[in-house]
Length: 241
Length: 241
DNA sequence: GGCTTAGTATGGTATATACCAGTTGAGAAT
DNA sequence: ATTCTCAACTGGTATATACCATACTAAGCC
Image 1 (tube, helix red, strand yellow):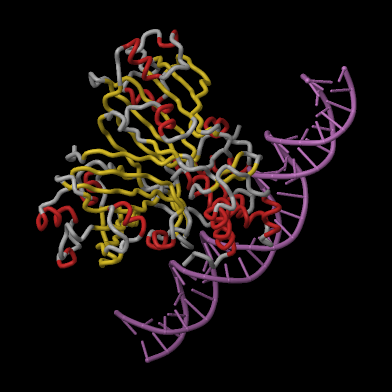
Image 2 (image 1 turned 180 degrees about the vertical axis):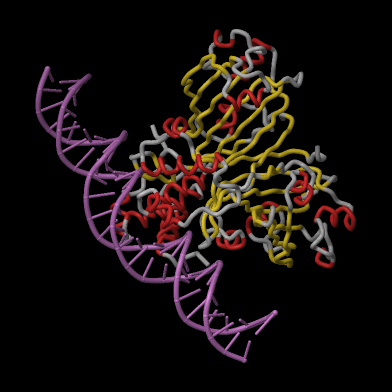
């Protein structure tokens, strides 16, 4: 079957080798689609097929109307480890960044209502944040907290680590987590923040978190750039529920 | 930004609604690309963009040269639960199937060598299996076992559950697992078995498994149809390593 | 310096068309 | 009834071309 028969696969392989060999360095920009298609004696459409294929494997990524780039190494993310984004990224020798976009109190969206097991239209705190690695936006997060457990949350300095605020002001810490992973096409909100084309593929990690008393305290939706992360975990095997 | 401005997004939305409303039932075949593009007064290329977008969200899937279909509900898969494929799928009211493709002894591929922490070219047992839900192939698995822990493995009836064989003949059971998740374009091997186009997106779950004595006994590579599964887990939060 | 503005380059979207390569089903041959 | 053959149909790949929307740049202005 198909390694090198079709033209777009031949081009794909050629670009792949350029990346592997290090001729194209992580983070560097590829030549323009028009120039590349000319070099490979093909059309932009076919060339874009090759690029999309590489994109699906996370080897290259694009920024809307800016160009194609070679993907940097992935960050490893373990949802079961009690460490914040900053700590995890720093430990991997990378430079993390966080930008608070918005914090408010809103009626719980349907999905949040279900996850937090609260009545319809219950107000919940919502935090929207954008996180980066080495200056590249890789993660858009929406956090929803049950205000019953976090009175006056918005009064605190939300630019700090959430888990620190939980610990200091409410004496709560994450003790158990339940998460689900969906490969998705990124929605308009996430893709605009991550500067990718609407609908380009990403990874949605949906978490519900419990504190030391097994109370369901919050949930979040993490929209990752598909090529920026590898989800990993290391746990004991459990008997079936 | 982009919900309904571009034509391919309008078409996407229209098809999406047809699926949501139940006019197009899970598993049913969509009209041909040519017919659909005519109905929406557009070209096949644009229509295929809409379909690819829906495919990225796992709402539709395609079978190579057979057509496009509405995706059935996803199966939930928890890598931390000690239950075999058959049990998990049955518990969700679905009908599982397994086909043994090949079983042999091969020199460990580089990745396997690394994961199992064995010297280069150590022979390992390899099992290739294809698994289905409700008659649809959703998972291609390659299993690699360290023969030091499973002498004469191939002598046993490998159509049975692996964990049963482990337990019965070797007194070993899974106690701990480490796994990593990669969204990937499916390789030629996996895609031909899953009847998808080479390079179409899938989910690779790479597991390394330890027994009750904490011995690294095997690893496997699970190539899932991207739209067929949702990875979920439920664990305690661990301190950072 | 800092701001505005127009031009250019880039990727994003779209049309029209053609041929290739498996799948399928109907009909012929047995 | 069973098998074989072949034509029709499906999605897969490819060419050629055009225009749109945004990002960037360099020139002009204050």
